[in-house]
Length: 86
Image (cartoon, rainbow, N blue to C red; front, side, top):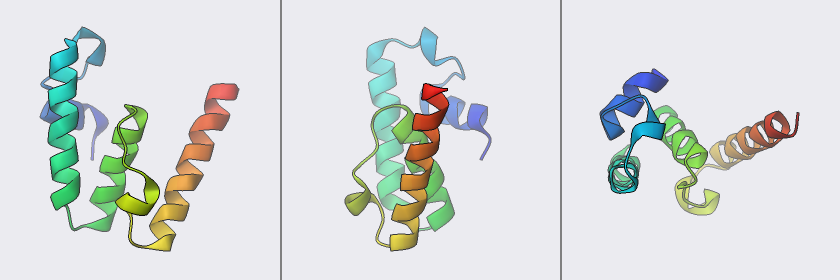
């Protein structure tokens, strides 16, 4: 998944700063629907990380059935926290 391609897919632009709040909300809603329908674990994880970055990710126990995926998500969250602190 290319980040800019995903931004264009869900939001119509790769520049989120130019979006109206309603357009951002609509894109996040589209992502949530696709996340719920997605069966491929890798794609689900990629969608979850993008939703996390936008402050819209579901809780880990809801998002991932596999403990391995929940642990990977925790690792991702820790990595983001460290990057923001640095």
